[in-house]
Image (tube, rainbow, N blue to C red):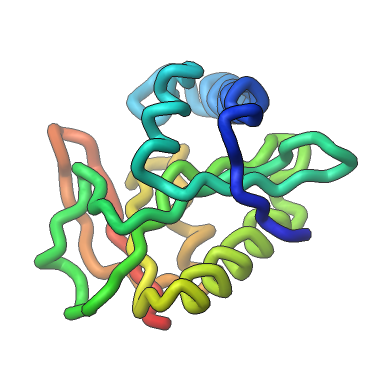
Length: 163
């Protein structure tokens, strides 16, 4: 499995993948702040400032994540260790049919490789602090919890991986 950089031709497929993930979250945990409403316009906007990656199996998008220099709105840098050139990992999603089979872990390993090759010295991210959040997954993948915060009333866990 290799992450490939997404382009504008992949937008419809990215939205379809994120929609499947959000429908699964809603079915398992109910409607809540963890359920997004992916749109093509949103995906195009995200691509304007982040490197969006896709993992494919048999030609179908099965996972996605983004790496960017731009700090996400929900992250406060005061919680993290000093870093000269951090990367921010956002918008990770794994198709529900492939969750809990190692694909997400392999995507994070690829993200680490990509970030190191690009000269980043850490990867920072946040996850919702609730049953629908992925905090335990990131812990199992070696990310260190650095803070529990609320942003606009929504509980988050901040994580980092030093490279």
